[in-house]
Figure 1 (cartoon, rainbow, N blue to C red):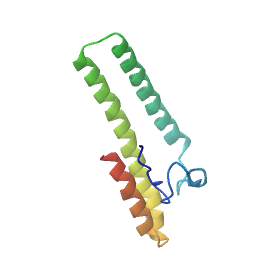
Figure 2 (cartoon, rainbow, N blue to C red):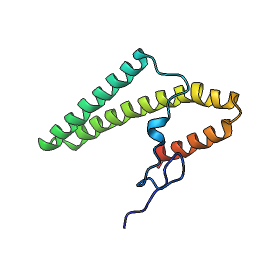
Figure 3 (cartoon, rainbow, N blue to C red):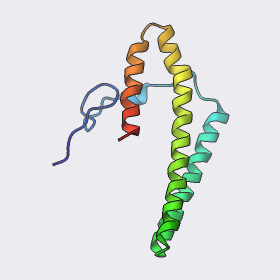
Length: 117
């Protein structure tokens, strides 16, 4: 039986959803340049994943697959850190200024726990 998880934002069951994803926006909109950099990084990761699929289909050497897997993970981690840094400097900072920083920090900590599972 699959364990039901809470939504990371509102505590509702994730399967039921809460609708906040469509309503929430960053405190400061991302620039076109920022968005393009993020999209480009994701396209590189996508290419790396396709490469991994091909390597596995071709029964390539395990170490080669592990190296490629490590590169894809590192690229995703770098993107995650970039999003985290921007979120902290804009969204969290604004929440603190507006007097509700505690909730935003709690939300961030909850998400960071998912990164370290």
